[in-house]
Image 1 (cartoon, rainbow, N blue to C red):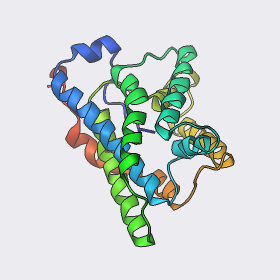
Image 2: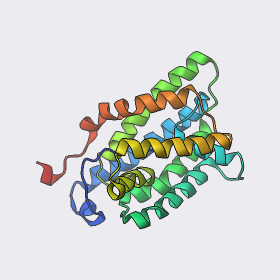
Image 3: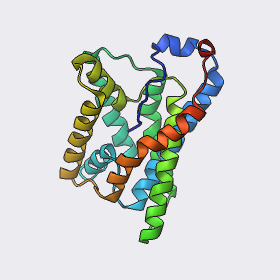
Image 4: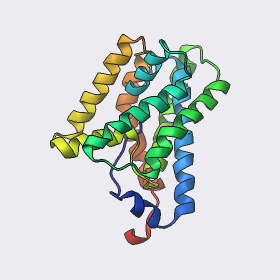
Length: 215
């Protein structure tokens, strides 16, 4: 769900001891809030969603739970896969798992469905930019990767396979399962895959909190 670019590789204790906590906490939750807003906008644009949300929405077709609750439960299941990979969740990992779903349900409650192709495309593009900013703020808070990105990096460390190969395999897998469950695949899915990396890169150097030891 959030593209994780390794800026620091801190243990949970180091994350809390690295200083500038007020700013980093603000960026963490501001980033997650913007990310949730962008997710809600992409869903309301009705042009397709990112691969993990294809899975989440596919599951939502079959269980009587809110989308946010499904995201929390899937994130928790993904965290269980960290155990054999010997990955340690950071504060950002836990916040991502719990807060993102709550924030998404909040925004979906108030955002209307977007109609008209021009408005849908505009909403999609703006949402991807907001997503990039949110992801950059989250990454630059140095509180660890989200559960899905941590799974990717953990598999990379344990198998030696390239991050690109593992990410592609994971996202194609969840995309396929989500599509079979009825999740929406479309222009938005392709646009997200192509644009989210550049959008996040655009903001990450401008929003990353400089830790005291980095001066």
